[in-house]
Length: 631
Image 1 (cartoon, rainbow, N blue to C red):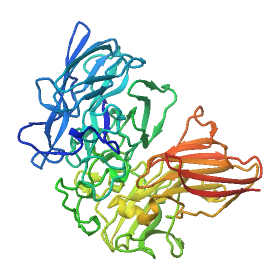
Image 2: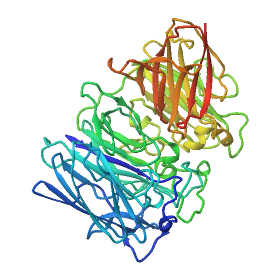
Image 3: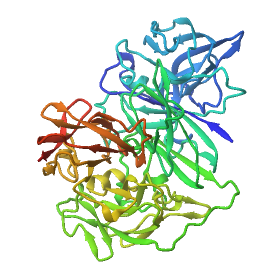
Image 4: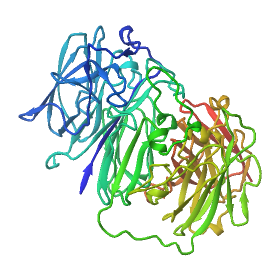
């Protein structure tokens, strides 16, 4: 069975003031129509003689992003004329070669509408339709080549795609299918959006009132997806926001099939796969991806920027109870919100091979209170116990100890909780049974669901890593607080761990500083903002394992430089999976990384001297630097 899905990320906002009539949030009004939640199962408009006619109207409506009976707010949304407004906007979906007649009516009070994306894709012609209040405009164009695109509107002539303030939900997916497609498309469309009550700086705070939504709903009210083991699944991801989104799938790799923009879409060669578990989607960009669920159970698909999966604060601004003070049964349902989708994979009826527990290696990972913390900014850390060996031996417990595993060797890791609050550990990127995936109260299935690890309790995770590579372990309970406190680390799976050489195999773990006052200007590299210099030798090969587990900052750039000159390295792997030969090439030593991504590179120094490895912000501000001395 083949199933395909379309996902559009529509996030608003940050820093640009819309025109005066839309500059403040509008609370729920009894005078506006209720906004329908658009599940995007069918395209809008009507087709006659090879032309799609779609009549769009922008007006205000009553939106309920939480439960249907929970309080709502009034926002601007698109509708098919004569029908209720929708969030996300009506899906435009046609085969290539179709002509389109789009009729746009602006029913927003005192706001001119600027509509983007209604033009022939791949063309260089005008791309904005200006519609004054009460006005109706028509635009005719051909759909253009197959691909994943989007349309969006704003009430400011100069607003970029993500800077739309209260007009943030005026967006929809625009899909052009191949003319060879037979029958009704089986895709699903999921539009991820962000609402905020006015302008902000682009940084989400724990005290903010906002909503990250998928198809007009915020987790746990988002739709649940159901597949069967062996299904083929396709997603199309569209990010119309100003914020990048590293999208992470638990338990499985997915293949990135294409990348594009509002205007164009470019497919990768079928023979050169791009397998990942986390893919950073920049603002105004699109991707399409496919994956096959191979193991039954409950899984998550979510943004890995931790601030995009926070619980929802009520619209009245009343505070939520602190997560570390809650005693919950289901972490996913009670301690997460926003850009999260639950995925149930059902068995296909075929016998499931039982894992071989013979010769299982046994480790203990102890979560402990570290020195130097406070009630509001705790200091936590992990201690790894492997037989008679303990790492680290003493405080500070930073960075988290690297866990070395052997490919194909069964392992048991008992997580012991010595913290004053519940925790859980997610084995990020590892292919394993759902029960051991680490989302407390959610992972597992069929009456066997993994629990939260209470203080003074433990949980045994069992898996057999099927491939050598670089992976991550981190909490999946109160993620922002516990990861910032110091709970994260790298997993390195090798064919022969006994031959591991830490001088030539270098883990570069990027994380969040423990103190909030440090987070604005720096990041931690291997547990510190001032890493010690490393020594290398000319002509020797070094493997650099970049692990990004920062809780925010999805736009950091890694560089390896001599003075102001960018050096070269050879790409080896992404998210723990070796790159195909044609992608494992030498390239400038620069990599943009998102939260939850890992990258492996090979570097061979060619001359003695002083080098440096840096992590910088997307704006070019250096956040941390590690000196390298080449002899």
